[in-house]
Image (cartoon, rainbow over all chains, first blue to last red; front, side):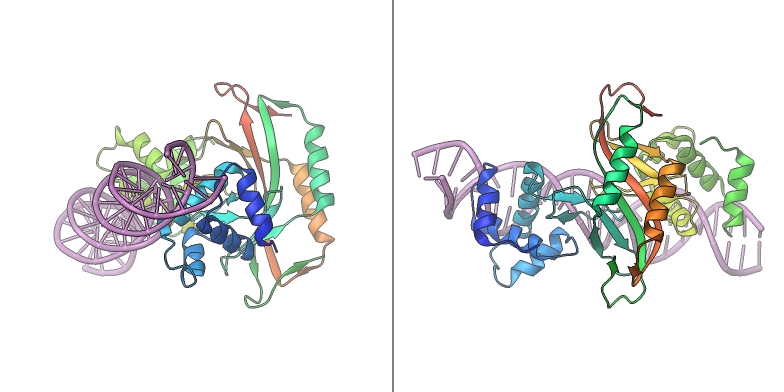
Length: 148
Length: 148
DNA sequence: CTATTTGCAAATAATTTGCAGCTGG
DNA sequence: CCAGCTGCAAATTATTTGCAAATAG
């Protein structure tokens, strides 16, 4: 997810937040990582260049971003929170052997699922979105995956 | 998920575990709850009848069950582990306003998804299973939902 | 009998909180 | 200016660990 400083600036201020150095750096780090980092991953990634930004601020900033819809939390099974800079509806591939979480989205499949639920009689429930969760393992952990 | 003592006994011993009172009670509690409890929920549910079973034992037992495949961990976004007695492939409805996690499975829809991936060229990835995650809110939090 | 399991208490890991000082708009 | 942020350190919460005593098979 390539995003430049102006876009980050705009994203933060559009949501009524003050544009601070910390927020710029933290958002930039999350957007630059592909595998959905934890708060600690982000802290480590930015710490060398920005030793004054504290872990507490990373947590608070991530929280604020989630609250404003700038980031989303990722579903996990190990009680560690991970963050996603892609806020549009999309699924995830969980690689059990590498601990990576990889984005996955297919327009056609999504359409099929949406149509499926349109035909259903859904009672007392307002569906917000539906995503896929693909549990898998990489065959060669050092190489990338692809689905075509 | 109604399950009797003999079945629990069998489920535990079949997996090479010793059948203890604690394990019987803990499994029975998880199976009896529909909304995917946390370790603490389980502890509270059993504590009155079984004051000698400690929270530590609940944690260890749940871990052991997950390791043996008797229970599954549920994906969450708040860093709290929740457990699922249904080990077959199925999806979840996350009710944001009630914090409930409700099972959902549709055979036909599952078949469509499986067929979709059969047609794909998947590289360097071995897919284990695919589930749906439905993010939603209950309209009346006190009533049940249904999808027909 | 003996390898496992349990209970207890202490330890750890992840996250949150309180508050004084700083800063963006 | 001053409401909203940040850094720091202490607090909290969920979970794990170590170990001696108990117990299933």
